[in-house]
Each structure stands twice: as C-alpha cells, then as structure tokens.
Length: 310
Image (cartoon, rainbow, N blue to C red; front, side, top):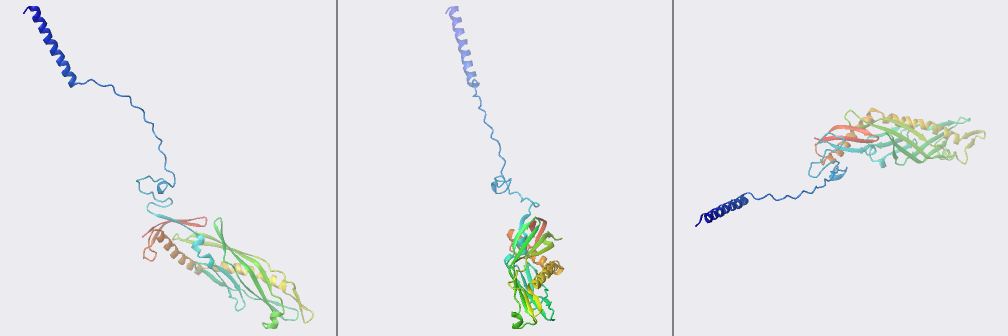
C-alpha cells in the first residue's frame, strides 16, 4: 500500500471516531428544545362576602360561624319588645265603678300591674235640702299599644261610661226621678317609659296619664222638686266627671309607682326573661339552669340583651 493510500485510511478512521463521539455526546446532552411562551392568566377579583351569605355576615365556607354582633364572644343576643314583657294585652283593662263600694274601680295592665282605686260617689244638694246621688260604671276595651319614642303608649277606650242617678234615696222612685247620663268613647292614655334595673332586667321608671272625654247632653237636664227647687242633672254630672279625671289619673299613677307594685312586676318579669333566654339557648326553662346577663339596654321600647346560660 502506498503512502497516500495509508494516509487516506488514517483520515477516514479519525473522521469515524469524531462522528461517533459527536453522536455519543448528542445522546448524553440532547439539544434544548424551544419552550412555548406562557399565556397570561387573568386574575379574578376577590369578592367580599355580603351580609347574609353563608348563614352569617362575613362568614366563609369552611370557617366557624362568627359570634353574633352586639355581644361578647360566645354570648347569645335576644331582643324582646316591651309590650311582650308587660304581658298579654288582651287581658288588660280598666273597670270603673262605685255602686257597691268606692273601691269597685280596678285595673290590670300586665305582670303584677294591678290594683284598686277609690272613686267616691257624687252628692248634689238641692234648695229643699234633698240630695241627688250620681254613681259611675264602665269597662274599657283592651288597650291599643303603640310606641312613641322611648315611651310605650297604652290607649284604653271606654265605649260607654254610665252615670247612674238617684234622687233622695236608692228606692225605685229615687231611681226614676232623674235621667241617667253617659259619656261615650272616653280615652285613658297611659304612657310608660321602660328602663333596666341594677341586675340589667327590664323595668320602668315613669308613668304619665291623661283622661279624655266628655258627658253627652241629655234630652232633659233640669228637674223641679217641691215645685220650685230645680236639679240640673246634666251640669251636676259634668262636674262629677271633671272630678273623676284627676282622681283616676292620680290613682293609677300612685299604684303603679308604689314599691310593692314595682316589686311584683320585677319578680314576674325576671321569671319571664329567664324562660325566654333559656328557650333561645335550647335549654329547658324548667331546669335549674340560670342566665348570666352580660349587657342589656333599651333601644326605644325594645329590650336587647347579651347573655350566657350557666
């Protein structure tokens, strides 16, 4: 073999080794492939939970419910209108009367708020020395209850108040000697301002009243006895009604503000509040469980309380 042929063979062998090395390197280190450019993903705005979503305001799925607003963590909150605290309004009434006794007049407004008022009969003396007597009878409807600011208004309407008249004595003759009169649609307005006591239970601290109405004029008002001695029964009845108005107002107010009346009311209200709050907590009110009042206030005439059973 000539020198030129040997040289060609040598270069061929070297080229083969070089190509083989390149292939080996290509297998160990593959060439980097071009990567696709990522597409931007739009960011969705995070919506704030609306009140009432997920059962409670501000609650999110999977999270424990937040404590109710208006009370410390772990407490319960309840609002009770003051009319419900007073009691069943259909059982409230004012009854006027003094035929048998001055203490026939009585009233009931709710839990422990009851009593009797002394309303005397009316005596009118004529010029002949004889007397005419006027008595009163009437029962109100259950009150219409409304709220006026921080006061609760109980409006009692009397469809008819009768003024029973007698002349000289209580015989049949004395009964028929004079005309009976009436007052229609007389209104007793009673305003109560609620508050809370030292134990944070609901009670009241002021009462004011007003009696509105008038006596209806009779067809015949003036009667003559012994020929020349007149009795104007209409005038006498109007005068009597004017005396009754402050007597009824003051009598109701004094009884409602008596310590004994307040104590009876507070005791019965405390029992009612305990039963209501335990029932809301799912506890049987007949059990010995008690309640711990953490905070309480009146918002207008609504009692709002934060508490814990214990």
